[in-house]
Image 1 (cartoon, helix red, strand yellow):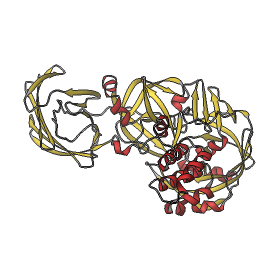
Image 2 (tube, helix red, strand yellow):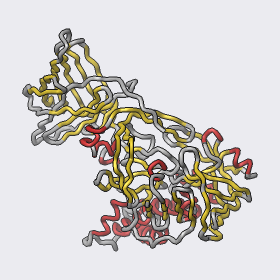
Image 3 (cartoon, helix red, strand yellow):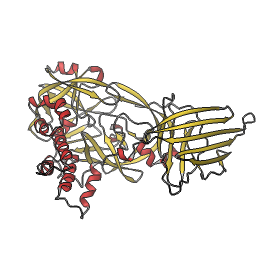
Image 4 (tube, helix red, strand yellow):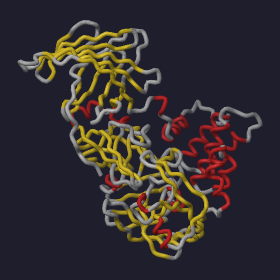
Length: 518
C-alpha cells in the first residue's frame, strides 16, 4: 500500500532551547511542512517555556538539535563536529544562528541565520533563512502546520463519558441533559438520545444547548436509517441535501437471525461477505470506513436495479464525484433479511469491488465476527449497552476506537476495514517524538481512496505495539505520516485490515459499541 522512497538531504544544522521568561511568547511546537517544496521538506519543533527541540532530517534519518538559548554563543558537538549556536527573541520573532565547523578544507564553516515568525492563527510560520557561508544567499519560506491545534480537536465520546464519573456534575439541568445527549449520540444509543436530547429541545426557554441537541438527535437518526425523523431536526443545509430521501421507504430489518457463513478475501486481505441482493448471489466488501453502502454501476445493472433521482456528491479529500441512489428491495446477509436497502451507485473506476457494505448497513446487522480462515458469524447476541465499557464510538458517521501505543493510552483512531494500510498521523508523532527520533526513517506513503492517489511524507518505524480491542498487535514497518491526511487529521491515526488480520478472531458489536480481538 506504500512505497518507500528516500528524500534528499537538506540542512538546518543546530537549534537550541528558548528561554521565554515570564512574558507570553509564540509557541512554535508542531510538525511543519515547507510550502510548495518538491520534494517535500518537514521539521518537527517541541517548545515549552524554557526549552526548544527541533527535529530535522539528515539524509533520511530524523535528528534532534537542542541547546540553551539566552542570546549568548554556545558550543556543542553535532555528529562529531563542533557547532556554535546563538539565539534570542526579537519581539515575537525567534532568531537563531548556527556555525557548523566541518572537516571540509574548502568549506570549513557552514554559517546559517534563521528568523521565525508565527502567524496569528498558528497555522503558518514564516522563516527567513540567510546562508552566510559557504554560499551566501537569503531565502524567505512559508511553513505550514500539519498537526491539529488544540482548538481544532473536538472531544471524542471517550472524553465525554469521563464527565459522567464526576459526582459533582449535575445531570438534571440543561447542561447535564446536553452532555448525556452527546454521549448517547457518540455511542449510538437511539432511545437514550431521544430521551436526553428531547429534554433539551422541548425546554420552554431556549438554551445554548438547544442547537447542539437538535444536531445530535438528527445525526443519530440519520446514522440509523431514520430519515424522516432526522428531517425534523436537520438544519437547512441538510434538509436541502438529504430531504429528497424522505420520500423513499426506509430500510427495515424484517427478520434477524444468527448464521455462520464462509467469507472470502480480496487480494489485499479485505473481507468479502456473501449476500443475496435482489435475488442474486453477490459478494460485498465489509467497510466500516464508508458512511454509506455502495455499488459499482456494472453491478447495479447486473442486479437489475433502477437508478433513482437523488444524487450524492462524494468528497473524500482526494477526489470528488457524483453517485446516484438505488434501492435494493431485499438484501439477505446470513439469516438477516433487510428490505428497502439504499445503495449509492458509483462509476466502476471509483470502486474496486462489486459492492461495499458500509457502516449504515453494519449497524442494521448489529454484530459481525470473523476468524483468520474467513469463517464469519452474523447476528450473534449483542452485549448490554454501556458507554463506560465501550471501546468504539462515533464522531458523526465515523467509527473511532480507543487504543494505546507502547503502553500509553487515550489515543483515538479511525477504524477502516475498507483499507489494508494502517497509518498513524502527525498528532501521534508529536506525542511520541523521542521514540520516533531514535527508531525511524523518512519515506513516502501512497494513499489510495476511491480511485484517487496521493503521496504523503512519512516516517517508517520498525515496530510499534498497539493495544486494540483487548489485544496487543505488533505494527511492523509502521507508517507515521508527517503531512495532514485528507481526512480525520485531528485523530492519532487509522487502523485497517493489515492490523486486524493479525488477530486470530475479530468481533464487532455495534449495538454495544465494542471491538474485541483475540
